[in-house]
Image 1: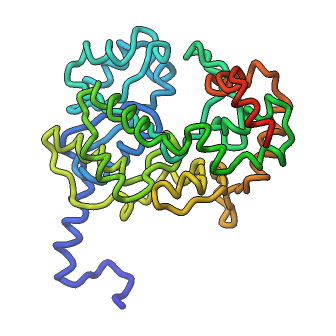
Image 2 (image 1 turned 180 degrees about the vertical axis):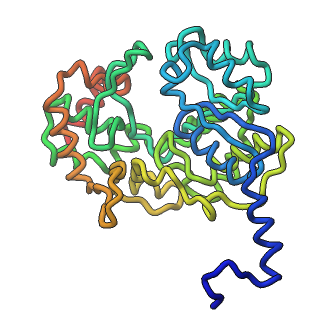
Image 3 (image 1 turned 45 degrees about the horizontal axis):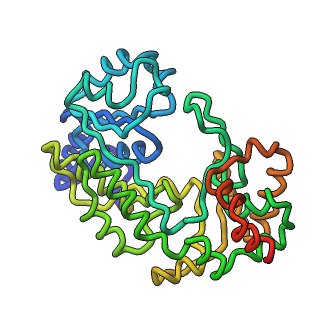
Length: 334
């Protein structure tokens, strides 16, 4: 072992000098605007383009951080490359992503990855008519709900009866086992509308198995592919490394929704009913995420729903089911 002093063998000195030089980010500057996926893209770019300073601008705090879209435009113009997910009017006074792109044609839009084939039961509930006043109902999984559990609660069914609905014939009747093609069409279509075709990437992701943690949280290699492509198409050569090997997968610290066994079987995967809540911000070494088995998840969901008025649990899919006598009969029959 070398002594802990400033001395270093001559062969180490050039390596150390190169290591210090590599931390100087004097390459083209990059701004990345969007949701939690965009944060992952920015993080990946810091790895893949180690000479470039990369700034992440969270979509949820645009108004607080920039005041007006004109302020956001001024901020983005100080960067050499600007990448953004789309965002609607209401997040910042003065316009939406289209207005931002019109003011700064350099802006490159990239898609949010939303893919529900592995998690077809996931829904939002609440009042979402006005983005600025968005009020989503809570659940044990943050703001993500099971449509089956939500509908069963609305029907006044017991928790144990509800848990019994998680089986293949019910999933088949609800369309959960035929969700791949619609999910592909939705993702490919939304990406194509931005001029960011994903057919090739989607094929590659599918070959690796389940590539989503939940319907709107892709795994690290998906985020890395988006970051790598944006860099290449902007003339920046990315480092030939895998994101997971260097940075891990940041979104594993958030909710993990299981792939139900009958759904998993369609893809040759192993499924489960183990739900993981978002990890605590505590840094304690013995901190461990909250896990729910299916009966526990149903019971915890019901406990929250019991405290909320029915209007706060609105969900288009559930409303459609409750208006369909054959679906109501399926749920009640158990």
